[in-house]
Image (cartoon, rainbow, N blue to C red):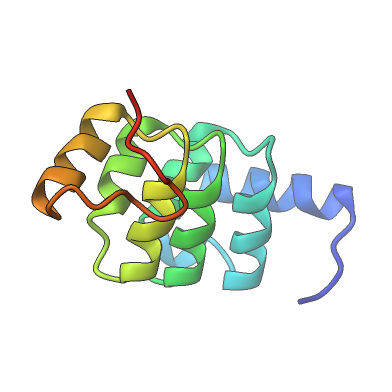
Length: 118
């Protein structure tokens, strides 16, 4: 991945937000992963990136501490197992989603979790 300076990141963010409704105009996957991994990435941008066709972008969104709970709930059900597992490991995941997942999967805790949340 190329090295991006802060000004380029801000410009790319602005471009993504302006063109959020045009899924093909967001940019390349490396830039999208970089944006999603930035802890100051706004929730609105994470929503856009969560709908990306590239699983690595969705996985990075699922790791984000700022990912909105409803987006995490959607990503738990992702067709790519790895994305769903990453969403399950995010502490921002709503408890009811984790409880439902554990019920469906016979009480097995999600990845990286020894005990279910209380």
